[in-house]
Image 1 (cartoon, chains in turn yellow, blue):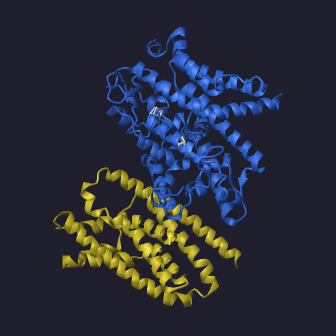
Image 2 (cartoon, rainbow over the protein chains, first blue to last red):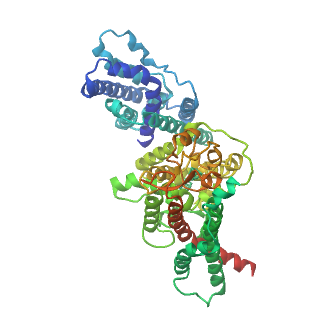
Image 3 (cartoon, each protein chain N blue to C red):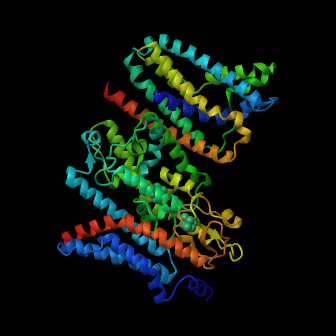
Length: 207
Length: 383
Ligand code: SF4
Ligand code: SF4
């Protein structure tokens, strides 16, 4: 659970900063203050929750077959961790953190009331190694309930970053918080790199 | 000429300096000897006398010469080295090894260290438990006495704790003085916030796992204190991390940058101490009236606490540890110790004297035990 939570937390920060520029204007556009943003945000988070619930169920059912192969079980999680770690570290040290986010697609949605739901869908299904890791985790849990719990922890961790959004206008020292967030993401990358490497070495030792 | 005139405004005559040293002399004598000398153990007597003289000569010299950092750092480095020496000696006496086993963890036999404090706060608030396998009240370096000491020092000194109270800061402070000129001169400004990111990550992971993750996985000072026995892939990875962080951030980078890189970029307690700079009464002030923007202070600051913009704005950042290096370097006496509420340029001598008394007292009291103990061991070794 802890692992999934931290995974969510680190992917959430990266996702917030890469997609932030695309998502915020839509979440906030035309909204009448904190209350409206809070409602949009709740819809967005609820959609993500539903999507993760579906993913947890699917991952567990399909994963049981795929992960019965020891080669996949021993090496795939480690490799995914390393890919994710590289992505996080690159993201935190790169100067060009331009928004290149799947949520760009919302620009094509005409009915603005549907935007938070649409954003919830694209944001949870965005092509991101963290999603693959959590899918792997869900797939390798002993029971369906454990798979749900892993996804729940991931959902909570990744959603925490969005919670201050309604108050974004009132937060002072935003630059400092953003800087600390970016650096923390880089650190999370290093943690996952170590985890990935130990997973891989463990996999090699276990044959 | 200018320079001599200015520095003489801070230093004092021999007699006056002696007078200023007298209270420190009496307090440290009482503290180190308990009011009477122990003649039955000549090693302990001699070690106590040497430590007592060292502390008071350094304090006297701070007043006599008007320089702060030059003498502070001597005691600070000796403190860090003595502490590691004493700790390792105790570990070897108790466990015959520098490493601890799982049994030591279960029996709460690990000496407490102040760097764990940031990780204890959230679990202590929510679970009412201390997530460190040490003794709360008994024995060497117990948890309650260390937390109280740190709390008092932090409230009074703010981040001054990092230059006047920390048990480990002397390591990178020492290595940062080896080269005359830095090889690496510039860093990315945002790295100054790294300790806050580390604080965020370790506080969070410690709260979630109820394990002091910084000590368990990161702390470079494990290399010179004690560490987990290497029995598995995990403990081997931990040992590799401790050693590489010590080598990189405490030895190599300080030598190359002339900065305290461990304290500037890693230590989570440093982040908390920086925040506490907001409440402490003492500060470092920039007197814009006399500053000629030579930026020598910016160059020498070991914690990246000063930028040219800070000086132009007439302030120091929250990262300042009040080490006094910039104060010593300023030929115009434009950057000086101050008290919050008193405008820059006013009460320079009074503020410095008051700050020196309080901060040096902390350093002397914190370091006395370790220094006496290591001097005693060295004396026994030599004679
Ligand atoms: S930053 Fe950390 S290690 Fe450095 S002096 Fe401060 S508390 Fe000590
Ligand atoms: S600003 Fe001056 S007193 Fe503060 S840490 Fe830097 S050199 Fe030391």
